[in-house]
Image 1: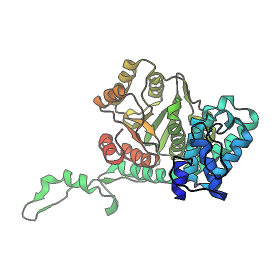
Image 2: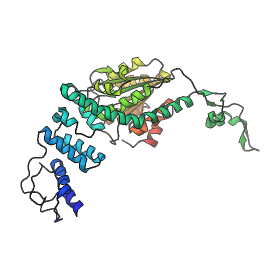
Image 3: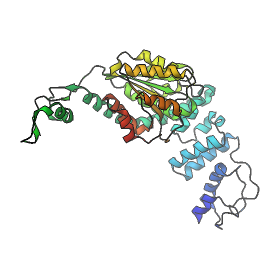
Image 4: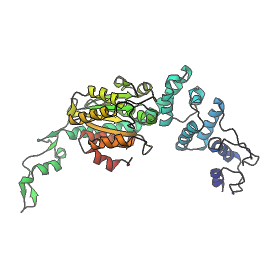
Length: 386
């Protein structure tokens, strides 16, 4: 009954007849401040009085205390959800500019996106606190994702280079070897006698692939910008890849020189504004010097504010030249995104897959692209349908 009372919120209509006190009452107050319609005032036994008003006021100390309360009473995963709801439902973005507020929050990807959107209007006294929040989130993402990315991509780079003189049995590509020797099939032995081996060439030190990450900075893509920046830094640390990172709204900014520091890279973005995908694709084309060895990843919801037909022509030209083009509608854990279905269908018709990808699946996606596997088939097997 206690749990139902916390869920239903009290008052004569909840039917539990359960009064709360102590920590339960404080937990209930924290929930009420956010999820009651218009907030609530309380009667003596922990239920609601008839008149509802208030919620979290525009007072930074009170909000900071509320943030401390929810961290006391709820696990971090729930805290992150409540913070996100508070920012959206109670319009707390202005208060995030205050240092005491930033010191009280639970850092997560959504909060980083909000801080980046406020970057240009953030007062100096809040900027260092904001950087500390961003730095905490980036460090956690790097711990979780960077090593996985390096392992997947390094293995794919090794496997993508072929040789007819593999040095070890482990380096033989048996599928390709069998296909190359089907003419040597002996029916009486029910086996293939290989006259030519196909294997993986390893330990190449030169640049093997060019990777261009092109990221939409519109507000809806905030989580994707954060994740892509961390992945960009991980890819840039690998000598076998030449990695470029471009962000865009109606303007295009090349942030490749900041890939060594994802925090500085993120503060070089400007979330919000319009979208000119065509201009971004045109700039990215100029970065590609070896089309057949290049991977172009466009991360966008595809709502084009520029010249749609020209954007599609540029993408078609890239694919004809041999560039591996991939469109990610979102790089986040949030499931199916909102996106322009017409543009996604047009890209799919020219053989360019467009789908949402979770951060944990992204290393495998890059490995598949490096090996020139069928990305559309890979997406069907590893990602949820948009």
